[in-house]
Amino acid sequence: MGLKFSSSLLLFILAAVIHHHHPTTALPLSTNSRWIVDNGNGGERVKLSCVNWVSHLDAVVAEGLSKQPVDAISNKISAMGFNCVRLTYPLFLFTNDSFASVTVRQSLRKLGLIESIAGFQSNNPSIIDLPLLQAFQLEMELLDNDSFVSSLDRNNIMMILDNQISTPGWCCSDFDGNGFFGDPYFNPDVWLKGLTKVATMFNGSTNVVGMSLRNELRGPRQNVSVWYRYMQKGAEAVHAANPNVLVIVSGLSYDKDLSFLHTQPLTLTFSQKLVYEIHWYGFSNSEDWETGNPNDVCGRVVENITAKSGFLLDQGYPLFVSEWGVDQRGTNENDNRFLNCFLAWAAEYDLDWALWTLAGSYYFRQGVVGMEEFYGVLNWDWCKPRNSSFLEKISPLQSPFQGNKLEF
Image (cartoon, rainbow, N blue to C red; front, side):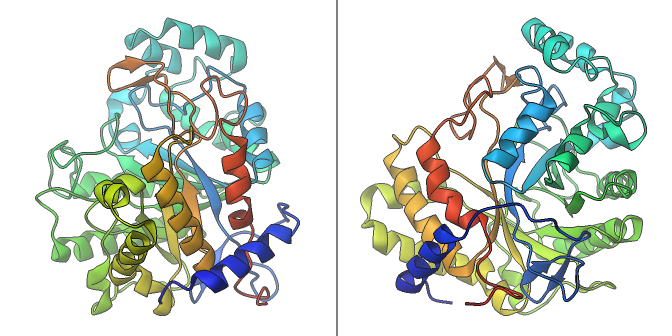
């Protein structure tokens, strides 16, 4: 799986001339070798070109809803060429009874977010007084109009639900108590209960096409044998509760290491639903990008990724880059070098991916009110793209150009 820059450039150019659109996809999705495919006749390739929508922070509600109506945001997602949202959530929203009666208004007020409350009342009044869990769920039992999931349905946006963390807050560190099975906030039994509840809750939502079991396993407790034990249980629990969704499995060391699967595959009772995920950011190799020759660094980093996860493509599994991103201001030279490498690699293998992040700003992050997110594809007030030239660069990657019925 060596990186062939000449052929990747050709495929990139070919993709650029394909008219970008969101065709009707026959859901649910499944897998056929390394490709994700739809439920139509013969199973045609469906490429996940997603953006992460954060909903796991302290306010425990999807970011940006104080800035823009939910329909306006989902329209922007579609207009920017994304066909999918990776929606993050904290596990305790579904397993801790203390969240059962707390409303969005009360959650924001507790954090002192008076301006956010006013913004909600103006832009999403039907959400502001819902309990947090109901605000996440919305259309499943209560609202058919102006609801989060149904809004994404109307814009033909698929959804992947990602258990980002247990306790609401910013992720991640080795010692935040959320990193690995047995950590203070990561009880495996509670986790399995939560996964089952989420999978069951969204069983009737067609556009919820996948569930990521857990984000960025990490820390001193991480252990390969324990990984096999509980990731198998988590995958089986999700599939038993909702056999329609893709089951997306992460590795160790902040979603960067699946190398142990070289010799011992994950054994499951079901097939054609398993997807593996990895993360890749420029800051993971910041010193290399800063001091080394960009082409040499790119070759070394891609070789390492191939050894730790890319080999899974050859084994016949889809590989979903569920987090990657850059400083959208364009002033971070390391990120710019990383971006060129990422685009070539992602084009070479026509990978499924999810950009970090949609959020132009947060209600409250790490003690800061209204923090701006420079990795955000939208600007601070969520009105327009932060960097239109960046969207032009990634546009070719938003359409499939390899796979079932799409071979050149």
